[in-house]
Image 1 (cartoon, rainbow, N blue to C red):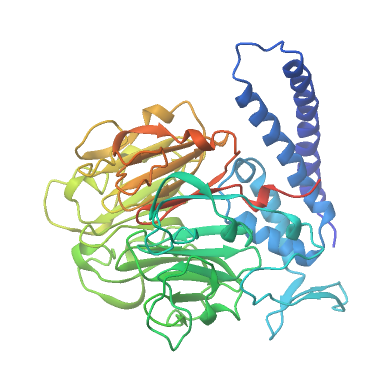
Image 2 (cartoon, rainbow, N blue to C red):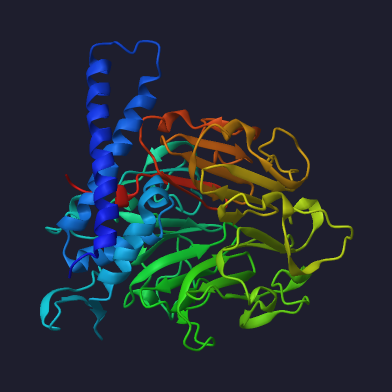
Length: 507
């Protein structure tokens, strides 16, 4: 299969620009070695150099991969909030859509490469083992470095249980690193890991078998058996939650947690592309940009114009004429939901208490229908996440906004109280944030230079700053300064940071 002329020209233009940048980084190397740049932050220069080199390797992947490997790679690309996706994502996603049409999934869930005459060229069976074995693939030789910290009472960090159940500083987690994760999502007392092969593993209080309802403490990742026959491309669980959602490579929707894994089939012919879990309610977006919500409907958090509970995904009619691109669900007793639409608007609904909705509400009554957050109009928000009673919004330029209840030390504006309208996080306004994560009462942000910042509750060491003291101020996680991190994730009171396998292609 060939790349279209327009796409190829765009790729070549980007490649030539990056090659020029590589020459600049070579000069920077020389200047650093000769100590010409004394007095300048050399770590930042090195991170800039490494970022540009990763960009070049990223472009080269188009030429190096088979269809089958490229297909998996593109699925990783779709899930990544990185500088590369922002700058080159449109071209590569279009190429991915074209090239992935040449891939089909057979009945045995094998990813098969076919040529234009529909002749089988190669096949790659799924891996159902606990720990993935190395293969000859470039991806298989990648060792993703995962760091974990915070509460480990149930083994949710993937670190062996010991007398120390709290880790106030990041520690390397070899068990998760071996899985080469593309996603890590933490719940109340558990963590789910999505491997590059599309398999879901669990640690902490997770279920092992469909007929086994008793949870076990697990610090070693185990395959979630009810999903072992599927290729999952995205998963989610709320940091306060016990139930999880996943999307398969075919756009099918599955749920699991305190009940066995099962497919949600009530929305006929739907292809799902995005999901969010609250503590007791959930949301899913289709490839047509339609938003469905279900679960506990208290305080109007489902957006259906009432406070009724829905047992099955139900279309949010108020946004039916919009294209929804992201959604985030809040926690129990603090029920609220936030969504982003393609017309550069951010919407909120549910419980207005504590400023959670990000807009001035002249009533204490629940908002049962979506309303626009005026403070985020034309800000190019592309990502929203909710903790227990507060929300973060990330723009395409890397600016970070927050609002909500601040009584539990999670107001990163240096105050303990409610922030009723979106406010930019001043400490990070000169940084470019590329990834964000929310725990129950704490937050993480990652910049383009791999800097990790944390704030909020810290009773289990979840801020990763070597103490158990909570902070309303944004604090840098110094121990990760030189690790070139680009992904972060939070559970209830535990955290993860890692170098995304997307960016670690062999040269």
